View (tube, protein in one colour):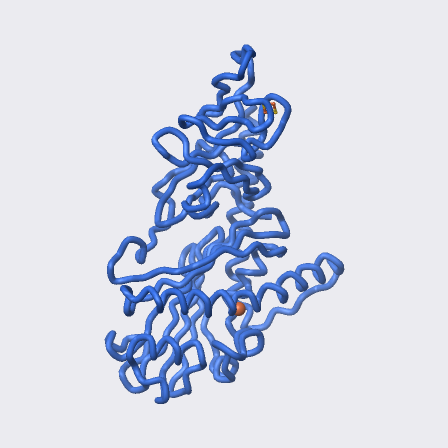
Length: 351
Ligand code: FES
Ligand SMILES: [Fe+2]
């Protein structure tokens, strides 16, 4: 259950540089590729001839050529040609609104008439000399909302990530959840604590001592349909914490897009944008490696949680105060989905 009239991250640009990519987004099988003038294009992954996946084909002079019998498709979903055949009567296939922006390829899997590129959320860190970004992609067999729950409730760090970013103070310091329009913000500020191993590494990477007390912050922001940005960092204690000046802290944003593939699987695009030592590629690499290990620790938990939920749909789950971020985020998604269904019902009536 996901809204379809929304922009989702579909892939990273490098994934379509060598040829077409077949990927299911919100239940829609889509072929992504670079068409005319290398512009990104997205077609239903279904050849109108015999239904072969077009993503197994190749791109030739901006056209997507089916890998089965050579039918050639234009970016507008119309058949252009096929060796030795007349193709004028072939029905057009579906195209999807798509846009390359902020280091990702975005797709709108719902009603194309409603797709407005201005709604693609701006990413401050992209193409900005003050920032560096490193990230990756995991496929996870879970409902995207389980990942939203996970990221909006970081108390799990104490248990799932005990060797890297977890520490007992996360449990001890209460978090606060606020809803601001269509955004949910859950924040936690810890003062005068020891930095956990990941943050000690980041402090060293920024030329700061790692053996002194720090103030630590986590500010998680959910924006529908499927993004959570988390401001994270530590500052040497006594310099203002989150508001400390740059020379006393390490400050980053954890970037998370969990694009539904199906009701129970996601393409999880994760990364970290950092606002210190942006020119240091070795630091980018070690942060990406550390973060990749951390997120892989969530993977098994989420997949087996999903399996439990599927095995026991009758079980009611508990809602504690730490779950507020996920609960509020789901309310926003429920509203979006209800509005979408109402729209479909109305247009059905009109027809
Ligand atoms: S199935 Fe694509 S050309 Fe035949
Ligand atoms: Fe986690």
